[in-house]
Length: 444
Image 1: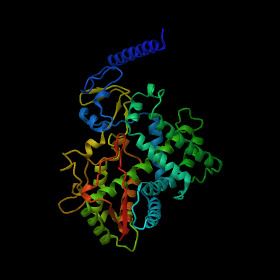
Image 2: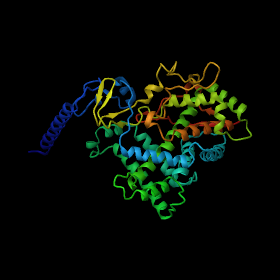
Image 3: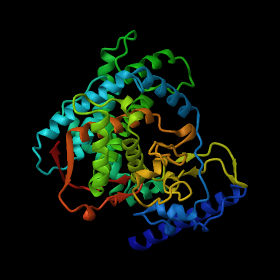
Image 4: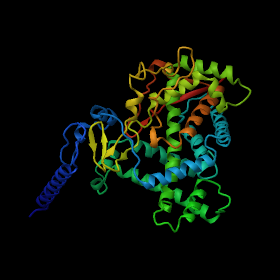
């Protein structure tokens, strides 16, 4: 038999097996599943998903939101991470001082641009990353550190790769895709390189660890590992240390810096909004002191603008996937154990029931008739419930302090007319990736 014929027969047998397995799983899931398009064997609903706009595709078949915790590992590590971050100053004066310090370093770098056009991507990622670095690694990086710059490029590329159609296919068909060549393997290599860096930092910490004086998140985790080394059910091990640290470092770098990059675009697109923010900064803070988190309460318009930027930006539109850990009843339907659920945060952030003109950039969505800031239950960029982002407090403080510090000293100048500024994401998948652009900063 010729090689081509043998391969064809082999593929036919594999496909038949997959069809049978898919049919068997469907028959044995049990319960009443939510309505939706009939899935094909093996392919599922892939043909109904636009790989370049998955959020819109999922919105077309969604019936609501579910976000459930999945397992003891998540509970142990989340509880520990929250406690440790608080101990290192989340929401307290110490973390505010770290952000203020980094914001001043950023201003120095901005002044070096001398009003000439530049791409803000690594200016913003360096400063934001140093805030979380001071917590997880115990120190900041020099802005010209080559290792640091390499890490930031890998994080940025990883965030982009996670949003490509290839990555989505890999997520759905990892059992097959992991053996096939293609772009989807790049994300694996990037993550492995990042994990290798974290592992090296852990090794350095181990060699100089003082259990009575933890310096950073890694030290605290190592101390907890030692405490629970005789517990067979403990989730405090080297693998989870590397992964948890990477998650904090990655999320603490890319989400806030991407929001700032989008924010610059919105402010240049709507210069009248930027001007009102300038006026509020001048009135409340002036130019003789640096902004502080306590200023937020006296700056409702600026607060509303930041909220509206986050709402429109919708950095992670589909939320983080979760797995149902038991058969779950939801609106008269049954979600079988093991079902993957996407919360679709973007569906809430653009819900016309909560925002009068959801597709328009309007800080008034967060202001009452008297110009006071008003909360909105549909504002969920950090998710909600048990799965709310554990870095929410830090991120909110960063966004306020960075925006006010930058706009206290500079005006934003676009290279094109405001009406021609494109605020469409460069890519939309796992994340909404800001478009690449240049701007000028004019000293005030």
